[in-house]
Length: 282
Ligand code: R5P
Image 1 (cartoon, rainbow, N blue to C red):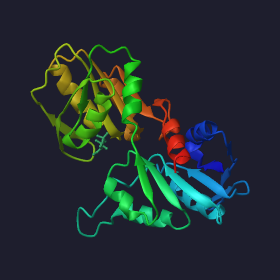
Image 2: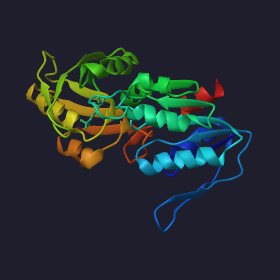
Image 3: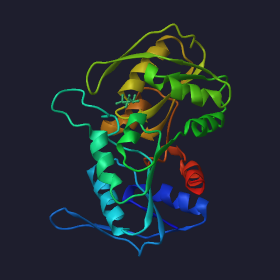
């Protein structure tokens, strides 16, 4: 068995390979003059683990090309971050079910797929091969325990993330709650105050995805008004679109941490061990 990765998931993929004590193939990524993507990887083994997050169109095309390059191999596809999974249904007439379109395109040529904190579990059913989703909630809890926080309150920014926040909090028996979010536009959200006892407390807002940072920046503003002592942010997928990371720093977060499902300077939490374990047990 060997691991092969797309360009943007090479650090995580190398860690998974090291954890499994198997090799990682070197893949050369280039572009033709007309911007078509080109890649050349090593001769595939009988079993291959392809690891690549879908963070943009190029990373998606690289996955399709790698799957094709590994034709004939038994392929486990690992999607640490599956972009487009937020569109799990047609919200308006004329829209695609984007998560289904992506899942269908990737299903051809692979034997199974592993995702990490996929935004909507329903998207797993769109794959025509066995699909398994892993959760980094405990890993985030363990990371937070290293920050030396005093009796932190683990907050979800909305009801949808409450289950995730609760699993993070369960790691060390911390208290948990959620806020009520109203989305005003693609960039702006409003958090309506709840009866939260945050005065003088260390608060950690956790979510599966931080995209523009609008949700958390607005929440922090409200929590500070209620007297929160320090506010930290932790998520699985740090997309940080439109300057999202700087937005949170400027909003006064004491720390902003994400996992390496999207590799960046904020990736303090690794999904490698969890992914390796899932591959070992399959
Ligand atoms: C949405 O349901 C997700 O869980 C996140 O809350 C959302 O993606 C965050 O977006 P943003 O950072 O742009 O507010």
